[in-house]
Length: 262
Image (cartoon, rainbow, N blue to C red; front, side, top):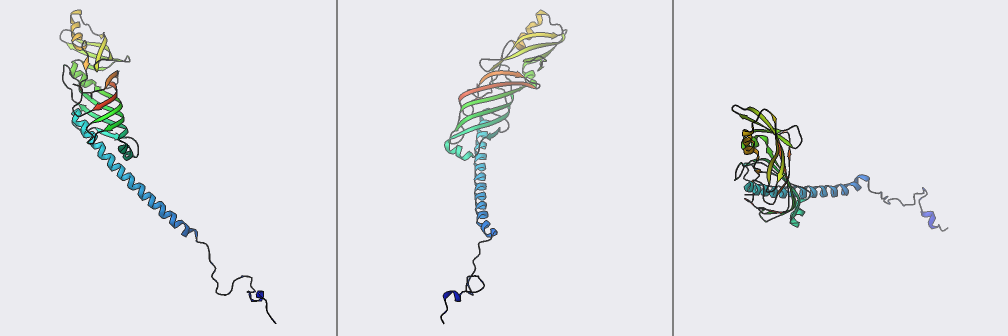
């Protein structure tokens, strides 16, 4: 008697003959391995790019610092920070979006009653550099020059400090027979990057009319700031607890070593 094909199938309902291979899906661990490898490769690549970018940034910052030190004649290199990441793309484009430079102890230069600048903080926007970074062209510049009361006192003669009234400084004069005389003066910016003392008042002590020439000698002539890079214009002067903050701005400023204002 003939048997049908169904009679040859296993009776256990498995549907497979003996010896057939039962393929199972890959385990979750095996599926995760390729993804983990890819993530590792991407992380290594990103780390390499970051390292290369930081190295290039450090070299450019050092070149800028050296150029500005030569131009400002500071005893130490200014600190330089290039904003943004990555910097390599900015260098490729030829323009750095923003560069912050802080220099200390700019020596006084030329003229009568020169005043050193204790600190100069400069922000340069859209900075274009030459191949050696010694020539810098910025679309806009904003800077604060800090003049300490100690340096002002050494330059002008009387001891200078901040007055209790906003926008004013106090000066103490000591003269034989007159004793100690305290005067108050307003401070403002005038053309030519100069600081002028106005509205001088005697607030303590006795100063005869004949002695008023002492005040004229100290305060009548504006104090020029001659160690500021060319192209910057003094906008305002603000007395603080320890000195004067002189605010400068400039547009389309080109800087070269030894290009500070004469």
